[in-house]
Image (cartoon, rainbow, N blue to C red; front, side):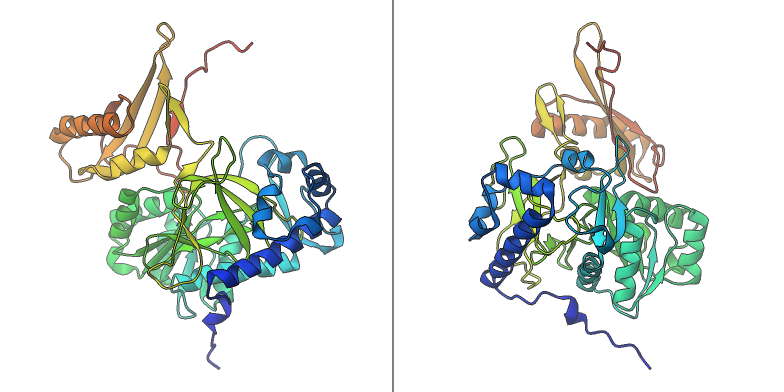
Length: 441
């Protein structure tokens, strides 16, 4: 019997801002009471802030609640924020952090089911159906990525090809032999595979129509390059956060001008990362999330460190789901150069708008020991068909644009296409050696 999927089952049941606000208030009340009654950490924090469950009467009360941070999760290791008995915990997942203790979050069966449901919603919004074949090239194991993509794929009835990351030969073989129509990866893995497909002349032998990618920021030129080398595939940016659930906390819609997020599962605030005060819609700031139905490890005003902005009004795609801009970077990724705060995304934007450049670049920061003066060198690849004779003109344009838009003077080194390393995970682009040789007092 042919499988039929009711795709509307994954979409939200609200149609107006007022209906969404009612859902959020109900969920906020439940979360605060659940945390107060079942989590000693939250009970103490809420009591210190002078908040009890009965004092939550409107969404405006959200700003009375204390923030939760990454440090709180690491301090509570191995079961931070646990708000249910151990016998209700069916799974743990951990972040991909590389320093100190990992951020580990636990899940009840309802948490897992909710995650799969709204991740499936993301697939549906990207147009994935039961007729699609989905090659999953993200990490499996304790990370949320692989199992999240696979479970959601199966939930919408599509065929899952759980290849995992790396193993370029197998990736290419599966793309040709199994003819997947959707490819799921990090942005760096997408570029790596796009160039490999081009190198092996496989573009006419594969059938990928959509690429769903996440885990890291990507520039417009990088997206364009991936799409071109994949034969014109449509790209969808899918954000995620292990602390929130995992990947699939929203997705870029088919109009490709925003990220729709699941306002019926969590409240999103944008705050100034320095003052922690809310900023107006449309202004960039740090994303802060509060879950509405998460059982095992609820989040109350959790500082994600991701930088974005809320986009007011209804999207042109017609969805009632609220939306934010694609993530610009992280507040802890920002670096200071000669007194100027710079996000890597600002450099992305400048390089993306200069003809003749590829999508890969690196920023190297150093300090002269004698003068104490900082220097910045931007290493960037030429586009594949760009002549070396254009190096001087391209360098001049980069220097002028950085001076005009970032208010800093940089040096530029143009290298051949393919000279900078590719990665199947997240590419490192900022290298800061300032202070490495200084004495620690």
